[in-house]
Structures are given as structure tokens and as C-alpha cells.
Length: 137
Image (cartoon, rainbow, N blue to C red; front, side, top):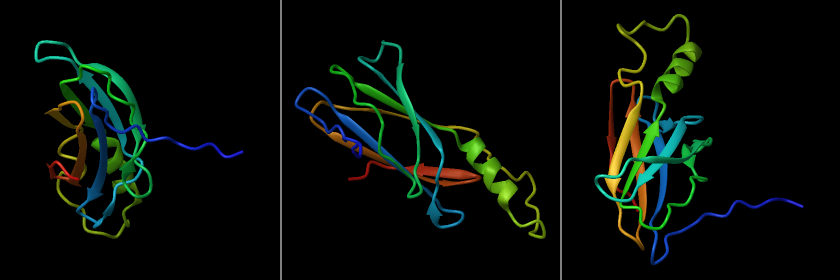
């Protein structure tokens, strides 16, 4: 019997979040990047980590936990340092060495507001020295 992964979508009382990463320095999805998800209910409330996952071969993180009812803010944290350390180790030995090679940003953390009933897809476009995010569809 095969197990199936169920994606939790937003409901009238909750929002949902998904993400994926594209490594723009190589024009490919970024696989095996650790991602953690935290949420809070109100501007003054502390963030509570809900869970963690990693991107798959397509750069997608399909199994983030559901957001609890009352969530108003979400924070995604991406471990970019480990990802770029692995990429640097895999690089050809005769390739020119880039000064200060590696990840300038050891972690990318994105915090955003959510409202119940909405789905938030947050793609990360990543390279060793910069990144961009947006609300996708």
C-alpha cells in the first residue's frame, strides 16, 4: 500500500503556504534546501515554529505543515549557507575561484502577513549574492 501525501489548502478560518526555490546562478531548481515554517497570531505575539522540510528535486517544498487558526503572520527560513556550501564543493576544481565565494546570505528569512481563506505561494529566486521573493500563484 502506497502512502499519499495530502496537501492542506486554506479554509475559511486558515491560510496556507507553499514555496519553491530557483537557483538563478545555474538556472535550475534548488534541491535539498532546508526550510522552516513559523507562525504567529498577532503583531505582538512570538513566532512559533510549526515544522520544517526540505525542497525536492524540483525545488518545491510540498509538505509544510498547516497553519493554525488565528495565524496572522508567517515566517519562512531557508538554510542557504548549507545549500551553497554543497554547491561549491561540487564545482569543478579547475573553475575560476570567485573571491568570497559561498553564500553572502547564510539564511534567507521571509516574513509576511496572511488572512484566512487565502493561499500564499512564496517563490525564492536565489543566487550566492542576492535573492528575490514574490507572492506567486
